[in-house]
Structures are given as C-alpha cells and as structure tokens.
Image (cartoon, rainbow, N blue to C red):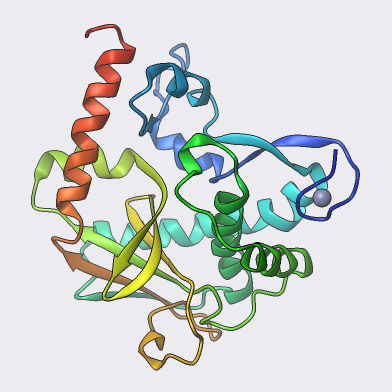
Length: 253
Ligand SMILES: [Zn+2]
C-alpha cells in the first residue's frame, strides 16, 4: 500500500487523524477501566470502535507518521501546556501571547491536522474536503517540512470563555469536534475543537491584510484569542448530544 505522504510503497500503519494525547485527559485514572473519550456521533456502535485509541486510519508509513508528523505533535504538546497554564492562572487579558514558539514545528503541526482531516475517509471527518490542489500543497509542505509563510493555510486559535460552569468544567476539557466549515467574521473557515480551544483554518487569499497578526508569526509569536460567548450555544448543543449518545451506548435508553 502507498503512504499518503511520501507516496512510497510501504507498510502502512494506523495513523491518528488528531494526536493521540488529546484523548489522554479523557481516559479513566483507574487503569482497569477501558479508555474512552467523548467523540460526537449519535451512533453508539460507531463510537465504540474509536474508543480505545481515538480516530485512526491506515494512511501513513511508520517513517512519515513518526518523523514528519509525530515530532511536531510532541512539540505542540509543550506549547499547549503553556497555553493551559496561562489560562488557568488567569494571565490573559484579551489576547494571550505565547512567545518563542518554534514557527516551523508548530505550523507544521497545524498543517498536519488540516491535511490529515481532509484526506481522512472516516465518517467523522466527512465535513472537511479541501480541493485536490490544497491537499497536494499541504502534502508537499509536510513532506519537505516547509510550512510556508504565516498566512499560508493560517490557523487562528480561540479560547472560548464560557459562563456555563458545567460546560466549562465538564465538557470543554474533554470535547473533540472534528472539522466543519463555518463562517467567521465573514470568511469561510474550517473549525476544529480540541484541547479546550477552537482552531480556525482559513483557506484565504494571502494578500488580505485583515489576516495580519492573527496567526502564529514566523518570529515565533503565537496569539490565542480569548472570546466571550463565542460558540457557547454550539458547545451546549454538543454537550447535550454527548449526553444522549453516552446514555444510548451505556444502554440506558
Ligand atoms: Zn511515508
């Protein structure tokens, strides 16, 4: 089988579409209990398959999965820790700024999320389909490990401030929502939710100046935008669906 990244015939492994560590906070502390996470699907039989290790699919050879993608996932994990620390300690006014981020590594991590989601054939990722040209651009950027400039497939990160305590404490930390197309400030964007953050991917004309300073800069400044009320209804809707799906799966309905 051909690896989707290097296009070489090779042994293909079950690759994660989103990093496996995103599911870690959702796994039970008691190691005897089965691991599970809250993925959104109303079909309890579909959910079951993904419970053990998150969304996976045969996409990549071991080399590509580990060296071209895995190492950036590891790096991003450290950056996510810094973001969480600042949020937890209320060190944020409106925009949280993380400095000295390795632009290449973090941007390649973001691009890999967009690309893997787009080429995935899993049901949960059906709402994202980039053009063949975009998919090929992203593949080449990942293969050459060249993430382009700041606006190329730029991703804005948003931290939603939530008034509802249950959603804030119980839902947000463990919610993973695969990408879907949305409109944000008049622009089309693919919105993904994980790690308590919205990740908005804009497929834009790079000349548009409105996108200055909202993405990670090549100098390594990563802005995280704190927005009150953004998508609270949306998170609430998912919280309800999650509850229904869980009860169905657990045989309570
Ligand atoms: Zn490969």
